[in-house]
Length: 103
Image 1: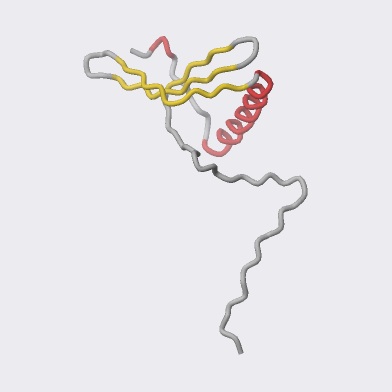
Image 2: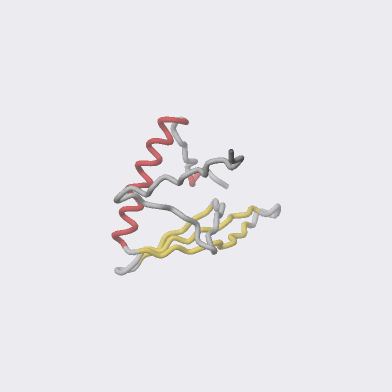
């Protein structure tokens, strides 16, 4: 009799299944400020951390810039919209402050 445990088998990858892995330089970032730019060829999304100073001055520390084609940006917009709808159904409506009322 053998004391060896049977090895768990990995599930085979199904046809047309996307496998997600993290690259060696994968980052997870938190941002609370963003700016958008565009040209006829691409869309730029600049992500930053906005820090309010005690003197009333603010500092924006840019964290990352993502550049993608207009087609990819539109597909990203559609996916984000769908995910926000699901989020709001589960957790409630997301309210965004009126920027004109912020100091």
